Image (cartoon, rainbow, N blue to C red; front, top):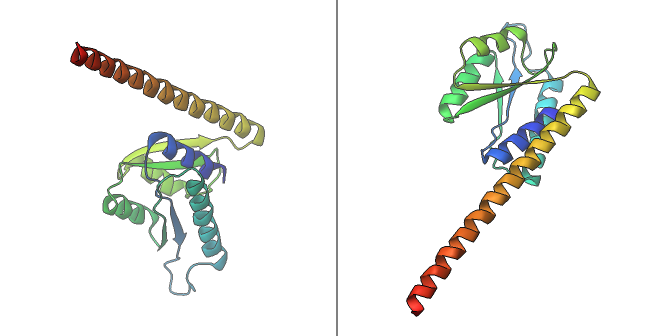
Length: 169
């Protein structure tokens, strides 16, 4: 959930459309009964949580749930079909949370688009410090945008005043 907070904030700050993809692994072997029910439920929970967070910050969102036996192929197809500029991957230190190690390695070696890798600390205190830092940077970006917009408005008003004075003379 911390990763989704960060990604929604990142999309908001960059004016980007967030495209969360939940890849549900479906084993290839014939004895398999398909995707596990708990994986399907986790996928739906993840997509709903991101939808809620994106709506709260008014971030445009396109959600996808993909049942696949080949994660890398599915990511590549989605990137091309949706004309994505970049993939943002989140990893938590040495844990295999979102992708298996070999899948992550394959994406790092041959990414289908620009790849942004965010590595989150595993320890909660380090994670809190990371998010406080990210929140501070987000606040600085908003402050900078506000100042730039105010400066532009002031310049525009000065130009308009100059035009009105010349017309009146």
